[in-house]
Length: 400
Ligand SMILES: [Zn+2]
Ligand SMILES: [Zn+2]
Image (tube, rainbow, N blue to C red; front, side):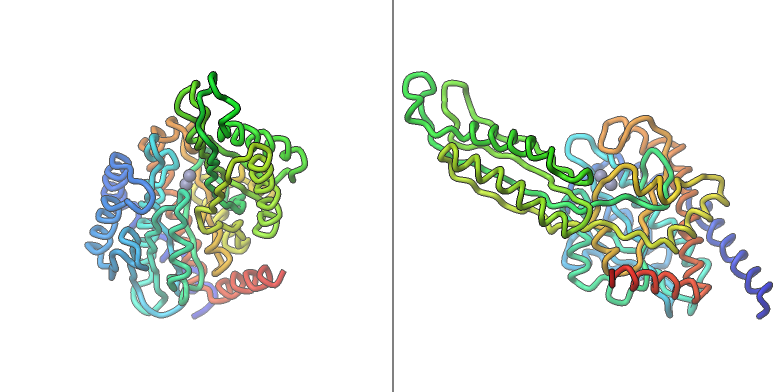
């Protein structure tokens, strides 16, 4: 084939992917709204798992339900040969505020992208694997999927996430969540206060200790907590208090250093008050996300071709910092996690964002971003030198 006819072939297959995604848009909209109306928490996403796997099967994917020893994870495969590219779906919600992170849109974006790729690739040009990953909001479904081999034969991984603006690069930092309990001794708070050991004092002291320590933290560090049990009644010296904390830093190395400082604050309060401390790390730590520049740049280009402008790499990597278990995936295979803009004044994890995630405008943005993601994957499938470039960049980053 001449260079020109090769280019025409790539253009044609991009158009095929985009057309198939458009044709599926109405069905995907129904699935998105159904998931939105049935918010499910970490590892309990049975309704969403059922909707997505049934749909993918009806579209000819080879579906494994309850994959990787998790009832709400799945794998759906189409095409054949190499390379193999994984497209991630998420579909968990948040307590109390439903789909305030818009994972209903992530769910259909993964399916839309894969539908486009399946149609464009046919058989023999490469394999697309849709990975349904539960419990992104703290449960670390992808960390378990990595450990259980989900990415062993995967050459690259990608997914999309809604937010108030478009950015092909995501600023993702490492996170460890912890639970803390103090155990003291009850006493009548007026009659015999000297007989008590005050577990609330310990918690307040620890909360303030962490707040003071914040001055010496790096600008990229984040520590934030809530007290979930503070005592029962003012006239009872509390014998048991609890808190949950998230500890975040730029990368796993800095996270380890920060964890030592934060834990010292909790230990100091136990020593000062005479309480017993229980300190538990409750998730598998999430790493930062190593954005694959080659893939992210390609995504930004395709998005521009579809009429939306991504923030520059510099803008994106110096803006909003959050955490995701996609970070861990990016340590295993070349990965991107573009953020796509949906019209809203509200940030993620607010009731306003929940409302925004159900609008027709957000759906249209999801469809557009899915097309750009499918085209980014097609670059890797159809142009081996681009897959090689993404892989070389990943290897160079690993050595750093
Ligand atoms: Zn979230
Ligand atoms: Zn999210």
